[in-house]
Length: 141
Image 1 (cartoon, rainbow, N blue to C red):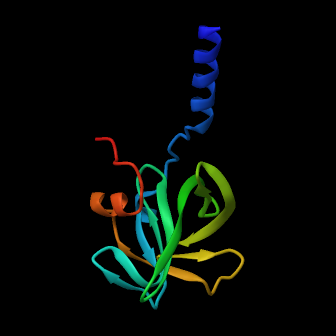
Image 2: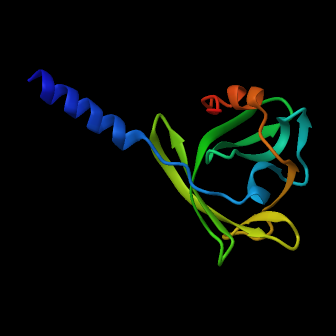
């Protein structure tokens, strides 16, 4: 029974672990809507997408007083179509899956459903203190 319980726990843990997806360096970082305002890397107003090299990040929106968001996990990148796929996750449950396109000429991310919903890269990396603020685990060295 003891071995069965250990095996069951190990199997559950393995189901919850997601391998990092290889994402091009030009997509890693902090992306923001044109109206976004920051204090360092912390969004104050507008919308932002934080995406780090380990495929973890967050999507955040703020009105200047309050911010809210969700954890984001990249699930794939298609170099032929420049499409980034990701899941929004809450308590290890996928609450939504979505995709965005990367325009290498204009250097923007945009929604496939609404091409006017565009993001420009503001920072080329997500700082360790910002990861902590977003509730993401520290990156392994």
